[in-house]
Amino acid sequence: MRVWDVYPAIDLRRGQVVRLKQGDPDRATTYETDPLIAAERWQDAGARWIHVVNLDGALDERSAENQRALERIVTTGLQIQFGGGIRDRATLDHALSLGVTRVVIGTAAVEDPTLVLDGLQAYGRDCIAVGIDARDGRVRTHGWSTGTGLTAIEFASRWAADGLRWTIFTDVARDGMGSGLNVEATAALARASGLHVIASGGVDSLDDVRRTYDAGLSGVIIGRALYEGEVSLEDTLRIGENQNAG
Image (tube, rainbow, N blue to C red; front, side):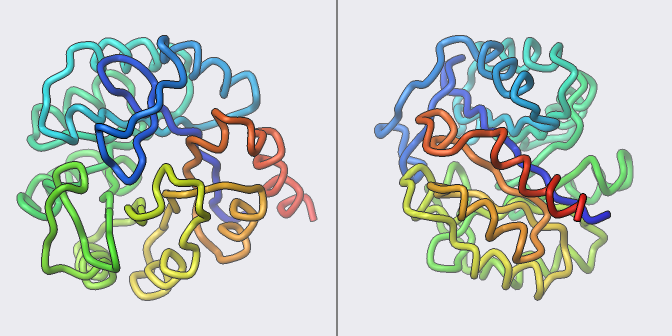
């Protein structure tokens, strides 16, 4: 049976569930003041995973509220994929010690690759993912605010050669905009690297979700479209269930 999951997003900003448009902290919409309520809502709808992001950490800001929120979300027993501000071994170790299933490393994968390599060695290939955030095919870091000279495909292929298994690919230009996933670029990244790639950024319809399955990707992260009712989590989960049953 192939690997494919739907990851409802819980993006944390000062302890609340928000979505940013194109990663801009000045363009935030708050969807829930209590992140645990959001997590339990998605759990009741059938979610197996939750994708949690510490936006304050990604933006190089401190946030005790987000830390407390993560600790509460872990109590649901859901599998949690967590990223944002994972810049050193202590932060990585702490997240996994709380019960996080998979940690996503973004900026540090560019600036301190040893952190990823050490994490893979210590915890295994299913506990560590690299987050690849790109605009016009080029990798960006520090909450998408800083450009690099790396193309997403060369960056992913480099990590695949070093033993990585999982990556999350986000098209920054589409994230939070509801303009549709960039499935073509995401699938191209998966084919070129051989990694398990989870798509993120811009889901606006059930067809978007279906296309990630049909393209052979390993999952899809959905935020705004779920919170605003444009797609239902139950319907998205049936895509994988129906295909596997068939």
